[in-house]
Image (cartoon, rainbow, N blue to C red; front, side):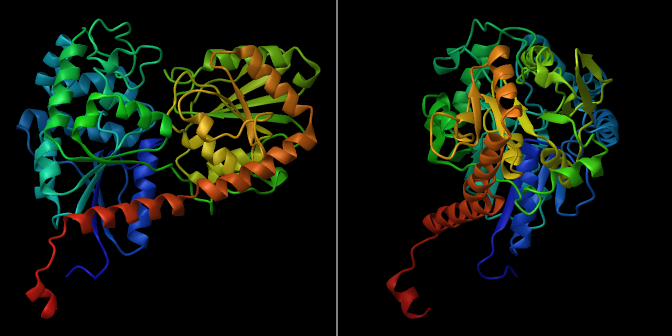
Length: 466
């Protein structure tokens, strides 16, 4: 029997271990269960042993040939969750597992051949009170199942990027064709890339799916919600809310910088600047080229002496640029280690071409690390800029402007009192606005509101006998 006041919450995510959207779903899952809710997480790729995480039954609902190759894909993903999903081997194994998906790929049609989405509820021990889906474009979910699922239970859909609004890309950069139907795509290589321009068909198919659905849509930033309200997704929305991401303030909090450096084996007296992202150098939404150019600029200045840049999120040989050194650190699944890197750093740099509401910026702020970031997407909603507002937490610069990034780095590294002010403001503001507890309670209150609105109103006779 379900305890009074608790909810059965089923989340959907690409995986149970990773960064970005996957980390958000995982943290919500843990928090919901800690509060006594029957929370489960259905994933495309299960990478942990958590019994409350259930893989979508894509493999089980396919023929033996497909099951064989999907099993191999899952095994390889468990062995190397950080790199394998982006490799040619991953694409080849998925192609062998789903030939129909290969045909769609050759035509430029987005691959929705994942039957587990239609059997999702059958695989659960109990029918959920509410379904909460996160990123749905990691080759594991059939988007055509949304109308069906939204009729079985209220379906909350959190967007972590703009893929649902376009004919193929997760961020359109300067293109505005997502507003009117895509087609004549200016860049088919943007992630998730397509081989041919079927973007108009993809856009129209998504529009029809949303029109037949009843969706409760959330975004972490006002910037992305503004796009939602101008997109074809709006026809399927029952309610929409901005719910900022949160970080665990028990882990991401200020601490002893010298001790963090000792724990990580980093030089105690060096100037340390941190940048974090999965696959930093090849990540299509980050701007490693601008960051590297900025490092070269700073390295030529007196402040460049004994300057170390830590690139967290990729395993690669170190680089030397003048007096500055770039050290690459592989993806770290343990958040306590990640928090130690933020505490060890003098500054956190976030160079991006596009971003929705990056967790890395929130984590840096929560650890009291001043942020220099490009003013794209939802980042201006995270960082309070210097010279533009009271209680600033960092510096915002134009996207792609290596000179401005370098100037901001130099300014903060040479002004210790200013860094201290920004560090204090950053930790204070993050604790006020971006705690995980706040995000969890906001979602739970919304779930209850949704469920209460759907509950039948008791008759007078039923109220008398209650």
